Length: 109
Length: 109
DNA sequence: GCTTACGGTAAGCTATTGCTTACCGTTGCA
DNA sequence: TGCAACGGTAAGCAATAGCTTACCGTAAGC
Image (cartoon, rainbow over the protein chains, first blue to last red):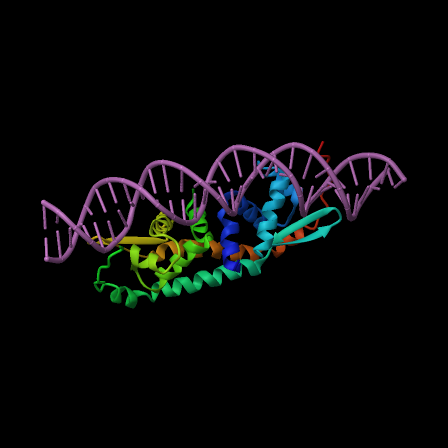
């Protein structure tokens, strides 16, 4: 799976995105993080694994605790993707004009 | 569902994102669009419905054809969201320092 | 009119996802 | 050394997502 795909998928789930945004406030350990949500700790652990696979978060062990934090580089990747989309969307006026042609009809048979 | 949620979900599926990127080149009718992918036309139609619900595309009827095009405003919404995330992630150094404190352990009982 | 291109929607099936509980290894502390 | 905190992972389950085929309404062209 490409990076952007995994990242969009990771942020698609509301719970997982909420976890991501919680980490945005400050780094947190898994258990501490899980207290703030109404899903179990393993569920949070699995969400974190998905976010990690998408390179959206990093983590570092501190004793028995595992402290997760945002990986800014992951956000940067998404931002770059959307910037490309954005400039293309704005530069599309030419293509819009071209696309007003009448395409010949076809039989689906 | 919030706007950003629907948008992330819409772009999470590889096929749907490919459809979105195809429309980025120029507006297209449904059938024409479906020829370029190895899924059926109804599947494409359903993907377009999801993209439309996420305000990522618009469409306009032209006879029997239904021509879809990118909705730049949808991309703008996502861009704004990521910009907020980005600035927060960079301004997080203070929070990182704060988070190095030792949290008291707790019994899960 | 009749027919054909076009595309949205319903129904149904399978694969995937998100969740749970149960279990396990690791670390810190008395 | 024993025990408690912590968190990753496996197994299983219900809900959802994405796909298909079948069907339907609408607009164009003869």
